[in-house]
Image (cartoon, helix red, strand yellow):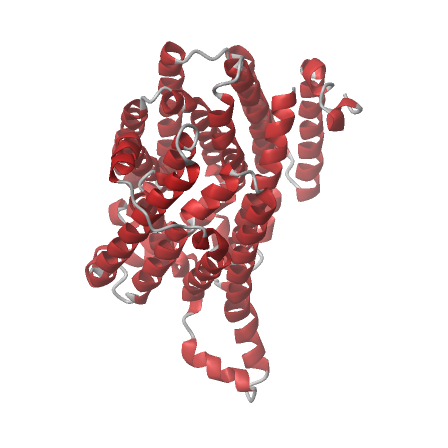
Length: 500
């Protein structure tokens, strides 16, 4: 169990800033129903945040994963210098290209009224990209405390700016019209402060990583770079495909749904908000990835690595199952919170569990994907992701006009299920890992049935207090079941042994 404890510790340190960052962002997004009565107001910023992940793949072009891979057998300092110089030059070039094309991009995205959003987006992409390798270096060197400090500080700056200019200042000026702070009204950009806060937080993060940049020697090894690019270019395809699967539905929603423009914006705002509710699952997945990727590479040369990977997968799936139940069994509480100002924000809540389960499949796929990264078969990862992207595109185009929110959710679910299954089958061929397949499937089926039973009970009697009570009992029952089934392994973990 030592490897589990080690990974758990790393996940805690790397996961805490990720969880805090995502949770703070989650709070900002949860604040939208309290700040804006109409969901359509959020449609434009949803478009921008759907473009950023696509462009981030282009800006970083697999350098983070390549750094972890090649730091195993290359001079780390020399590798860091080469990759950093490459990212610095390419980031400036890509940013300039986007900036001078901002008018065209704004028109294509339906953002003619807010071309400044594209300008701010360029800045966010630039500074986030320049922070990529310094963060990777901190992770590779196992310096989680500094990593956590910088991550959380940047997000706090973002949060405070948004809360002040969107939440506090307008109300204060309304009650104190003679205050000098009314001068800030000339900068009244509404929801645009979300982007400005993000930009300033990214700049601050980059500034706090100055020590890592000062260690950089401006040297570039073209031979090493070609070797790295041969490894990483399939990861770019994987990244683009992954972004298609993750954000395409929000990017194209209002362009494919057969509704008037204002109604389409309303539905996009609703769908984006519902998607954010499922982000709690992705928080867990992202936290795990932060620690797991360097861990998997470092563990690959150890004896019994495959058994370690199988054990890690089991505990990861269990964590996801608990998170799924937390989201699904307390869905009524989330709905109650976001409908304080307007009931319109609760539309589409029924798709949250579908999206959450789809994200579990995605997390399992990330675990499984280690087989092609360790064996140097990254093109297989590209093929799998392309297959998922094709399915996503087809299903979104076919289902969104007919089923609206449900169609987009089903497309996400089907895509990640397909990718997970293909990756498992191919992985067992090229890099066999003894995953407890039947047990893991049983856990996923069980939590789905628990959620379905809870909704069935609420169909006959649905007060909020009863929903919370029955949900808590079902969650506790599942925890007791897991403790009994996994008693032997859980008893080896010091923090859990006394409970099982």
